[in-house]
Length: 275
Image 1 (cartoon, rainbow, N blue to C red):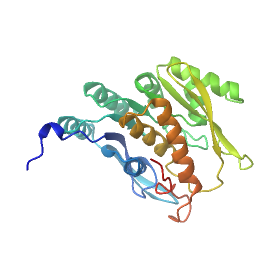
Image 2: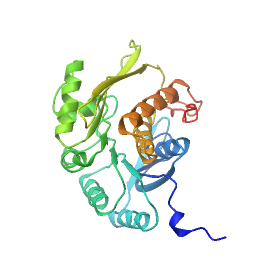
Image 3: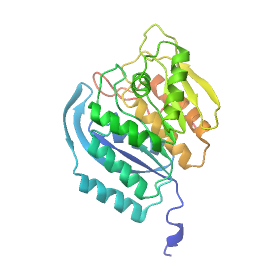
Image 4: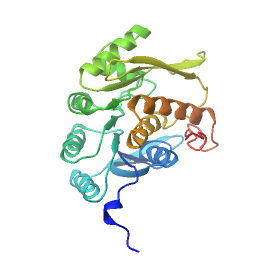
């Protein structure tokens, strides 16, 4: 019996706009791993391809903007995307392209992982691209998930205390992001927990804490957190609960190391046994 065409898109579908990471630990692959384990169907707009492994990245290539336009058009023509997340967007022209396409089609709430700086504080974007992201992408965010250094960069301030992180989160909300997940400092080997500050659109705020795991297998942590939030929103979960689920999901994935790669490996997406 032929399936009713009107039932074709009833299953939750989530889209990632990101680059392909050949070792599978981060980028689009980490997003798709997360979508699969959170029981949503993952759709992708590929923006770039990276050649690398657990030792590092050795080459990259960006895809033509007209090809990216076609990806967006084809997805819109056939699928019902209930939530979208972004990963690293390499330059100003790509950021503008993604913003234009997101506004053009209905792809649900947007989770922005503002890949600006590494977890060690190294800049990944040129200043012009950063400004474009801050001016055009941040105001579209239903949820934004900056790491510690990205919060400093976006808010234009040094973060030395809990009060500073709270102030930075409020600045991001003033820039247009509805809900903010401002990650705390995660690089001190002597720390026993990691704390993130959550500021919701309603004005409610709270801290989320999890044990600190001393491991080199943390590639894809930020990707997976934002992907999990998007997956849960697509299933109809509230933003607050989606953030709580994502925090637990990533903590379990980091805490149960998987033996893949010689140096900086991926988190274990199979470890979380969560409904």
